[in-house]
Image 1 (cartoon, rainbow, N blue to C red):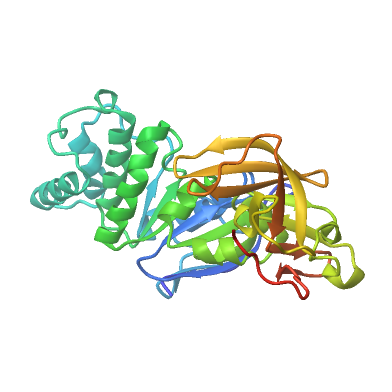
Image 2 (cartoon, rainbow, N blue to C red):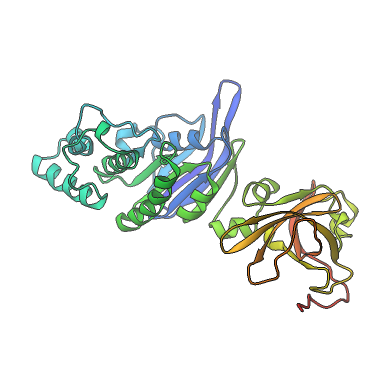
Amino acid sequence: MHVEVRGLNKHFGDFHAVKDVEFGITKGHLIGLLGPSGGGKTSILRMLAGLESPDSGEIIFHGQTVNNLPPQERGIGFVFQNYALFKHMTVFENIAFGLKVKKASKTAIRDRVTELVELTGLKGFEKRYPHQLSGGQRQRVAFARALAPEPQLLLLDEPFAAIDAKIRQELRSWLRELIERVGITSIFVTHDQDEAIEVADEIMIINQGRLEQKGTPWDIYKEPKTPFVATFIGESTLIDDASELKGFNNAGGGKPTKALIRPEYIEVGSLNEFRVASATEQGIVKHLHFRGSEWLIEIEVNGHKLVTYRSLEKETLQIGQEISVLVHRAYLFNEDDSWIQENNLKDDPMPVFI
């Protein structure tokens, strides 16, 4: 394991910011630290970088405990969300800064900066100053500067936060390709789900100082381990009493059990579109949102607002229309446990589309 964290804790006064966090990261992987603001993501990143000291726990890089090593001896590169470029230095000088600190030769500096300028798409901008660059270009300089000393670990604190939406989307793909080409282990902090899902090999969900779940974006979405992860990732509707849904009447064995319904768990159609009498609810279309390749439909069922998708190839539903609603499965949880449960269709057949 390239990076290991064991029993990490951090207090700021009476505030317990990071609580017994443990994880391991494979060499070359890109990891997204995802969670709400104030959850502890940046505190974890800063402790890895050596900018904060943990109260307890171990931080291990390629087999070596680095708790007592200063940042410059940990073999890391750090990219800040506000770029932190030196305004009085050119692009070339900014990228070369870390190499000069390490007292590399002029030839080595020139060769390495030239390589990174090519890699990051900055050729022709070497003599420009930060104020002469766009936000996306400044961020590329920040990446190149962090990579220049050839660190073993790259840390990024919300690297796209200061960039407008269009450029941010372009830089996500660029970063993914860059990390794959360089092959460097990387950890980036974000509160943007789409960003984490699109870019990361694995995601670590951080909430209130704790690691809720670590896994691939697909695994976390399909098999959330805690109610927080289930409600935080993706679009969903929370129903306080799962037994209100047909097909989930015995959920929880009599204990108060909540149900979280994702859009893909739901099938909707006109009243005669499918027949599953014991499990089919009746709903009303409240809103329709065109999403290019499909409709996003908001429906009301027994006082609850559910959200689902519908193909453009199927009959277009109308606002106010009464429809059939089948909840195929639900993420259920109570004070003791959480699980995904299929709808109990009893003896009825599966949906029949007509």
